[in-house]
Length: 181
Image 1: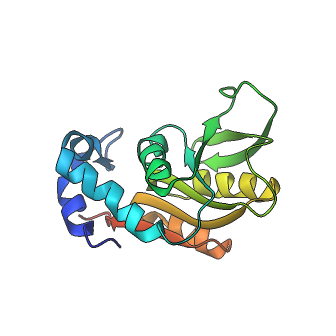
Image 2: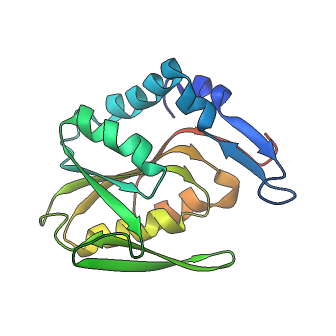
Image 3: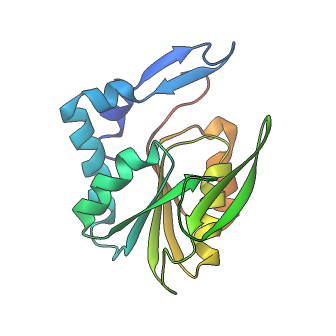
């Protein structure tokens, strides 16, 4: 967790019973609207990764872009979008993953990375881990090396971060929420 983790967590809004009854939605909009909090958020990632020789930040569509772009800029590395199926205009590779209500697919340009590139994968939140794992698999298929997977929020009760670790990837989150928080 980041040194700013408790502060960042305090700025995130919990919306009960959305999008369905019994779900506590973790809304990062207030975090993005608060310039001091947003700066601390980006700084949390920059401080963690500034000495790790990252070649690219691979950010997951769409909220991962919010963190990924400024982070890549600050780290002086490239930014690579991992998009939902059908959004990239060039030759792509894809990975399907399971959702609680079906399947989804993410894509990456086939020439996004060179063999051995050191890649940081970022998204806004880790729930079941499916999207993050799919992105990491795509990167590995291109010859890239996933240095770490990172998110603003981890929901450990949904076991996604553990699934990612079990698959052999390191996980970092700025803060986490349990179901009863």
